[in-house]
Amino acid sequence: MADEVVDRAVPLLAWHPHGAHLDVIMDTIREGIGLWDRFGQRVYANHALQVLFGDDIDLLAGRLPLGGGTHFFNREGASLLPADFPVPMVLRHPAPLRDLVIRIEDGLGQSRWVRIDAYPLSDSEDGHVTGVVTSVSDVTVLIDQEQRLQRLAHFDALTQLPNRVMLADRMQIALAHCRRAGETLAICLLDLDGFKPVNDTLGHKAGDQLLREVAQRLQECIRGDDTASRLGGDEFALLLGGFKAASECEMALQRIVKALAQPYLVTGETVRVSASVGVTLFPNDGVDPDQLLRHADQAMYHAKQEGKNRYHFYDPSHDQRIKANRGTLRRIGEAFSANQFRLMYQPQVNCRLERVVGAEALIRWQHPILGLLSPAEFLPLIEQDDLIIRLGDWCLNQALTQIADWQREGLDIDIA
Image (cartoon, rainbow, N blue to C red; front, side, top):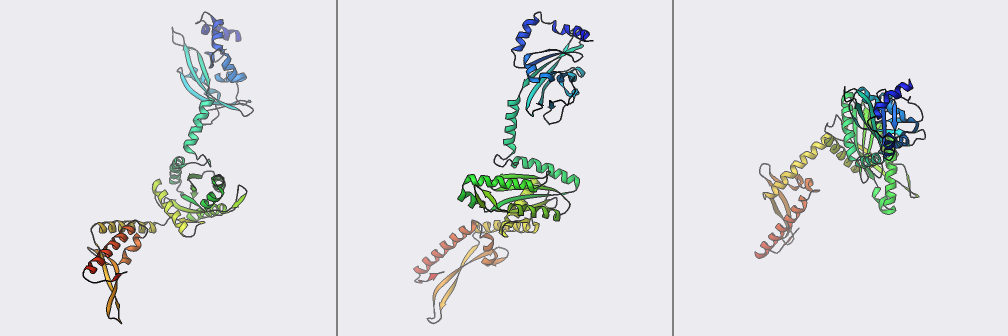
């Protein structure tokens, strides 16, 4: 049978009249070149191909059993079967096979990546496939560079946690899964309490170590299907799924908050930080990823206001109050531009002397519909807005102008 195979392979080499010279030329090529007959028998392999595959060279034709010291995997990490190798594939479906990238792992755990091209050879007279030529290149360096770039694009360099880009991808997947399974997904934003003093007093190196420790604890607290992500600075995000009720989520959050509040040993110093966690639930609080993240951010702000080292669930009624306040702020700004504010003066009288000794300036809003509004109805809403500064400057200018007018009329009093 072996003689029969060799005889059938002879026409494959007959296309070149100087076979010996061809061998010398082929052994100088860095790519691994192989020639196979129509039965999948190896006819030729240059030196580079023998170096790449060694004793497992005939696996390219699916002729050796898998399960020895060498293993082959595709780019998705799945083990290859003999039928997946290029020679049998091209013999079954006579068409060129290009850019098949596989990973070879030897018995010592060392691995490398190769790219394989395979082309059918045909008889020019009848078009029947008479064999296959394969070309193999070692692309380990290229794949390693590609994977490093992919990691930089999707993972945080300091903590190795998923970054914002990867979080967005995983969030879409998690939302789709929870929608199908009828489960609840908790989207959490987490900010460290007391991180800045550690960073300022012990230095950035200590701060980086602390962030890595926090990332490690987060990963230990969540399940394999959940996601912990670093968004930047000392801010992290969590996707916690598989809940049927909010009470189940609370148990996980209590465990996370407690774990993060335990002491850390950083550059030989014991430090303590805690976490303020804002939580919103899908589908209860919304279905849009950006909206859910905004809700979690609002809840985290309230966790800090309530004393830190705690978690706070998003409150839709509070969100409605915020939206209403935003509308009021807009209307107050419009009222300022429309000159609807008035500065009124309440006289201060010395009863013994029976004369006016001063005045107190009081602001009012001359609302076109509601009438004259006291400051208690609008000042608290703008205390944290830049509009309070504009309004304060306006009051000072109005009062100084009034003082000047009164002095010209012979009235010299102070204004409070």
